[in-house]
Length: 338
Ligand code: COA
Image 1 (cartoon, helix red, strand yellow):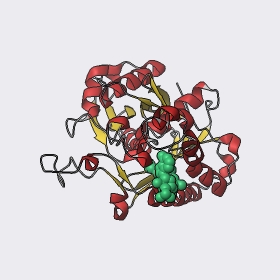
Image 2 (cartoon, rainbow, N blue to C red; image 1 turned 90 degrees about the vertical axis):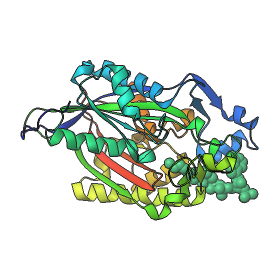
Image 3 (cartoon, rainbow, N blue to C red; image 1 turned 45 degrees about the horizontal axis):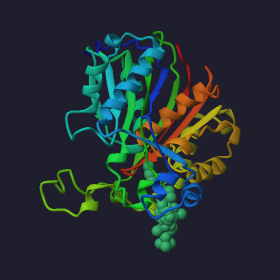
């Protein structure tokens, strides 16, 4: 149930973080035994050394429930006080119902509205924007945003150009209302989409354009990617989006305490870091151990940055991502845990 609009809403705060990763570790050496690739190729082209895979009986909602539980424990919030559960995901258990509704039920968020959000790897930042809007409009006080993905079940384990990139994880944040009339922690968002390149990163079969009930080639049920085009898009939009956001907010890159970018490819992140001129010591990456976990990648990195003592209360944090759609998103937020 969503609270009635009160018209005096306080600003939204990033109040807590949490994550879950499956136990099974799949190294580059494991993939060498499966496709024609090498650890050296994967590390030099992407920076990834290993990733996690869900077990055969784990679906996306199973990961989302464990990550949501971690966020709730860290915030010491009663699940019954959560007003909305948003699950950014592009690997839902089913086309419908939503992962969010199942997650809300299983964590005891019995008073929450729930919906999934499909902006692929940009989904977590899109979800934070939704949460901020819900809180600052007075529609909700407590919003749980949990990015959750099981890519290991939608990549073609015979396609070396995609299977090496992705991993499974869930991670998220609690966005809460601050004191009435007080400014919030979210300083601004810059979100975008360019559907002209939609088919550069897609799963052709399984939706209403190409139903799985019609004949199709095996590989069409898996992720298809034009890697070079996505690479060019990513390096362009990450820089452009951050520059637009910081210019609008009149914040210099030197004021940013921590940059957490979508963990897709170290070369893409390094390119953005160089172009933006941010000091490398202010950048946190963990893709080496998880690969690209899509909507879970940014909150997973934030959670680990917190645990590593790199993300501290009061820090000004810049988030930026890109993904299928094609979409992009950036956000500037002051981290204010409870
Ligand atoms: N192991 C060994 N060789 C591989 C390989 C693998 N896993 N995958 C591809 N190759 C080969 C290609 O077949 C190609 O061979 P060829 O020159 O004989 O045709 C060669 O390596 C170079 O391929 P190319 O696609 O040009 O490599 P690249 O330097 O662009 O790197 C990606 C490929 C996928 C790492 C890179 O394009 C990328 O990161 N793109 C963005 C992907 C992304 O982030 N997607 C998620 C978005 S959220």
